Length: 518
Image 1 (spheres, rainbow, N blue to C red):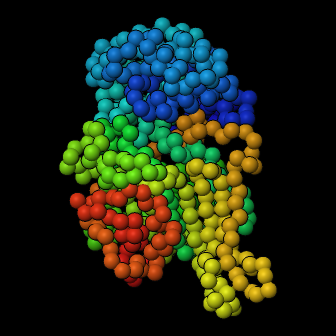
Image 2 (image 1 turned 180 degrees about the vertical axis):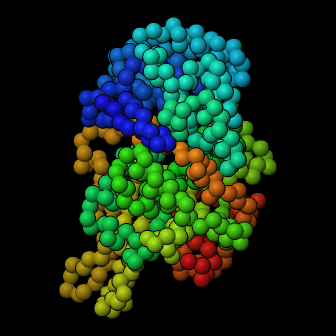
Image 3 (image 1 turned 90 degrees about the horizontal axis):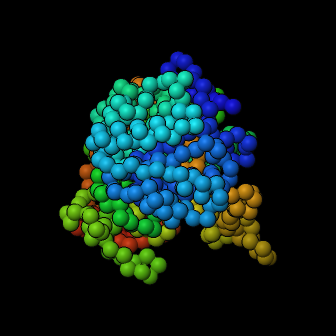
C-alpha cells in the first residue's frame, strides 16, 4: 500500500513502513547511517531498528550500513550493534551479521566512493536506499553535497528510490536553515527529504490529535473562553552525558525549544485539520507558528530566561555543573535551561499565555502538557469549605507514565460540606496491552516534516537568539500568578546564570514574570 505525500502541486506516491498492528512492511532497502558510531545511533536508531526487526516489520531483504569517522572493522560494528540492542531475536541477529561499516571523513571523497561500492555490492534490495544523517549538524552540508555525487539522489524509479533523513536541528538560525534547504534541493526532490522530529512519532504526542478531535467534550472548551494558561514541559534528569560537542553548538533552545516544544505547542493549539495526514496537519500547525507574537528586546528580557545547571545532586547523588562537564568550555554561555512565555495572536488563543520550559539536570524526567482552565465565576461555598479547591486542569503526560489526567472538584465525605480537587487518571499501560512503539520506530507522515518553500526556517524566525538574563535568588513571596506548586518542584540542582545562582523559587517567579505580568 502507499500514501500520497504532497510535493508542491503534485502528489508523489510513497510506500511507507507498516505501523504497529498492521501486516504491511517496509519495502526492501539499504539503510545508511551517518554518525554510525555516535550516541544518537546507539541510544535511539539501532534499538528502534532492532524492535522493528523483532516485531516482523522489516523486509526480508534489508541491509544496514554504518558510516562515521571512527575507525571500525565490519565485525567490530556488528558487535557494537549487538551490544546496544541485545536480545531482539533471530531477525535482528541476521541483520547485524550482514551489517557493513565504512570509516572516513565526511568531507573525504574517498569515503563516498567506498560507500558507493559497498551499496552497489548489496544487490537484491531493489536499489532502494535511505540515508540517515545522525552525525553532528555541522557536517550535514558535506554529507548532502557528497551524496549529490555518489548517492544517486535523482528520482529514478527503474533503479529504486532514494531518501535522505535529516535529524534536528535543521540549521543554527534562519539564514543557515534556508541555506541547508537550498543545498538539499540542489540534489534531492522535496518528496525525498525527511526532516525528522521523533517526538511527533510518540504515541502520546499523536494522542493529542485523538483527544482533541475524536471527543466532542473537549473541543468546545479548548479556547480562550475557558482556558487560563497552558504549560508545556520537557524536563530531563540527565546532563549532557558525553554529548558536549553537540550540545555546545546547540543548547536547549536549538535542541528542544525550536523543534520538540514548538511541535507540541502547534499540535495543542492548532485548528482541526481537514485530514489527518502529513499535509493536513502541517498546514494547521504552520498557522499556529505564524500566529505566535514575535518578541522585541523588552519582551525577551521580561518573558524569557536562559540558565545553566551548576553542581548539585539528583536523588542524593552528586552531579557536576555544566561548565565542569568534559568537553564544555569553562566560560561557556550555552543554556541548559530555557523558560519562556509565548502569546498566540489568533481568535482561539488571544490572551492565553503559553509557558514553555525545558532543562537538563532537573529533579525528575517528565514531558507533559498542562492545560489549566478558568476558575468558576462564583463559588457558593464558604472560603473555609473550598480551601483545597483549584481550577480544573487537564494533564497530557507524554513520558514517562504515559497517560491523561483530569483534575476537578468533589465533595469530601463527611457531615460537613467541604470541597477539594481530586484527580482522575488514564494510563496507557493499563488500558492497552500492546507495547507502544518508540518515536524512532515510527516514520509516518506526522513525524516527517515536509517543507513549503515560503515557510522554511519558520521555527528559527520565531526562536531568535535570546540574551542571557541574570536572575538571582528572590526575596519575599512570589507573585500570585507564579503557581509555585506547579513550577518549582521540577527544579533539581541549582541553576546558574552568568555566575549568579537561581533557586527553585526564583525560577518559578522568573518563569511567569514580575507581579502584574500575566
